[in-house]
Image (cartoon, rainbow, N blue to C red; front, side):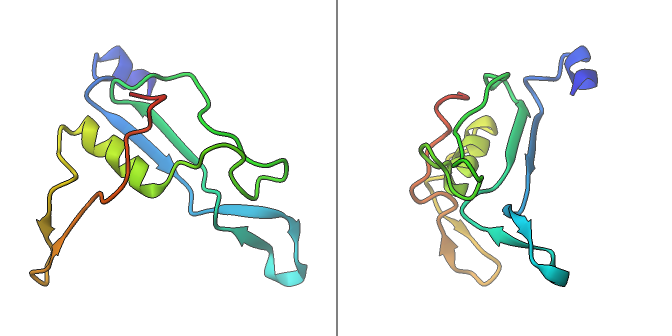
Length: 112
């Protein structure tokens, strides 16, 4: 992040880091940890977004969102806005079927 900021590219590059989903704190024998799908780690940097903040909060054990959840459609809406694209239109997939990239997501208000 520091290098592209030094080069003046912090507004031009959006770095998105996301995990698959949260893991339970308890290890279950030989199978490892179970997964808590409702919670996914997410970090954004650059892209002209407002940085240096935490958005949202998980429950005490980290298994579910405690505050309003940021959904995958919200992340996509944020990325589309950064790219200057309208995600409300349709695109045609490889099978020729029209699909909506963003059906009900909204850019993450705290970041834009």
